[in-house]
Image (tube, rainbow, N blue to C red; front, side, top):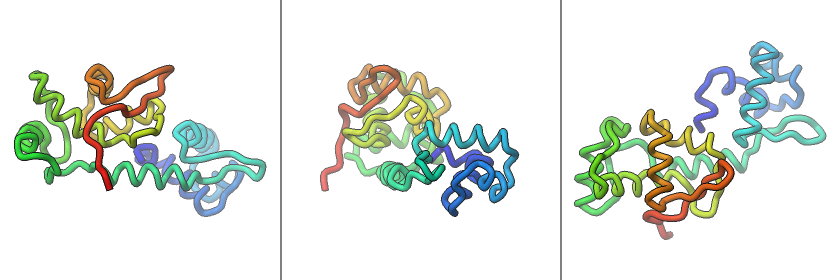
Length: 172
């Protein structure tokens, strides 16, 4: 979802969603200069929102649905679905939908990391860039958050790919 936060990428994605299949059509419909459109297409492909097939570019609707579902799991809010003790910790560190500081005390940090681990769908692999984009919605120091998520067993990584391996899971 963070990929769509940049206006030119958003316009390029919208052009493809509206049926533009080639770069010339994308440039024409989006109004984005060709070089910028090509960069946006490359970034959207690497982020999984666009795909290329024999007919040209197409919107990866399933990826968008997955991202929307993942964002629906946890959104920057101060209404926490957690036990009372954990809510107290979360309210201490999350204000106005952002993590104000990363807790120095491990027990409190684990509560925050457990909460943030819900950004990631169990069983799904994420490129490092997608992990960074999700975590950047919460705090600017994404490298530290990524490292803590791995070190505390909430995620694992291999070859710049991350997947969730721990934390609280919602059961339907």
